[in-house]
Length: 182
Image (cartoon, rainbow, N blue to C red; front, side):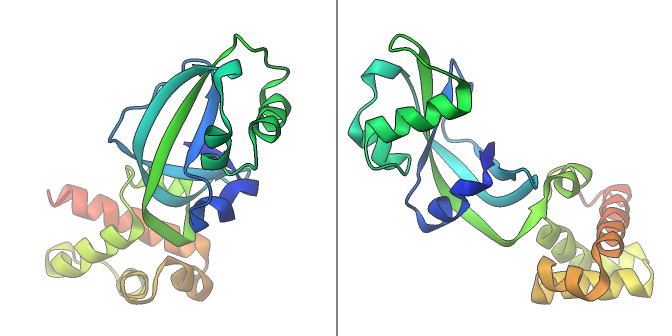
């Protein structure tokens, strides 16, 4: 689910636990999805959908606004108008409630998640370390996977650079897949 980067800190602090989308937005209650900030297209968290509710704009309340990180319904509607263009009282919106189940302090580029078939880099590194004898990958890949596992993705990127880390993750993912591990 895409969210503007302006809301990142509110979400991670727990001040914003809903997002309001124009129209009939499809979200499955109980599903876990990645919360991706724009314009950087970076996953900052995995969230569980806790509520999906349809309302007309005129039915929005101050409580809806507070859950969405705004002081009152007027401020909320002003922001929705900026995002979607002028909304009218009978326009339908979908309120999607969520809870953060896992934070990614370093962030994970969305294109990396897609390339790993939505497996998290830490999971790829863990599976590699549990199965490395079967995989026979090169020394640099081994170093990178150990760094991700022990110190996190951000530290690995700062040490080896994003291209080398991405390449090692893809190589490891494909080796794990070929070996039938994932």
